[in-house]
Amino acid sequence: MYLEISNPMDYHVALYIRLSKEDENEGPSESVTNQKSLLNEFVQQHRLSVYDTYVDDGWSGTNFDRPDFQRMIGDIEAKKVNMVITKDLSRLGRNYIEAGSYIEIFFPKHNVRYIAITDGVDSLTRQEMDITPFKNILNDMYSRDISKKVLAGRMTRSRQGKFCGGQPPLGLMRDPEDKGHLIRDPETAPVIRKIYDMALDGWGCMRIAKQFMDDKVPITRVKSNTECDVNYYSWGSARISHILRNPFYKGAHLVCRTHQKGIRSNTYDIIPREDWEIIEDCHEAIISPEEWE
Image: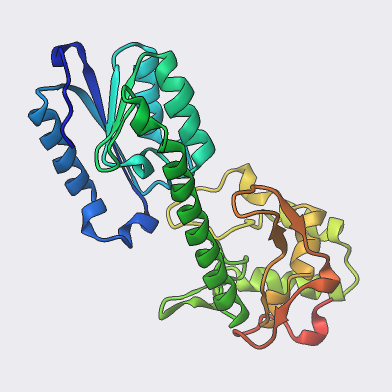
């Protein structure tokens, strides 16, 4: 893309680079190194002066709270930058509403010229900008499709009894030989066993929690050479009740506890216990099935 840029020294350029895991599937052309090479070649060709280069590596295009993106926005608001250049529109973002708000509202308000090289977009050229919203929608659709595929893959693995969550439940740990398989944690499994023994002896959740706080039993696995603070012993009746109802401790796998309302939504519906999808005999149990409520 070659542009006629009059008075190039009037511009203080921000080169913005973004790469996420979903972009790695598109090949090396999307790498940080290749984006940077393309952008530097462009500014040299047009004799532009670069104020700074902003790189967000490993950040989704649907998230605009990226650290270097926000740093760039701060520099624009401080009038240090008046031109933003990206490889293409998707580098700026894949949420067409938010990307459009920056291109159509924020940049013009702050007298910033925006250029997306491979998409042929220059905010000073109205004809080229007319198709920009449609390209943003396509980028958004691509991101939604990737999100659906990732979610579908996670659900498939979960229904196979594979643990796909973050931190395993207290008392269990990831198998070093198979990250999707859980094994007993020798440090914390006895804590879970004791909770069930106390409950079977007639202790209520509040009483168990109080006893554990008095005994300074940590609520999580203690890292080596770490001195526990008071938060490590903050047991409560709700925590005890949750443990007593957790099917993982009988060797089963719970597919999911919540249902996301939408691909981009951060709101969830809690799945009632009677509707839980439980896969039996997935890993070594800490308690017997008869002891689970």
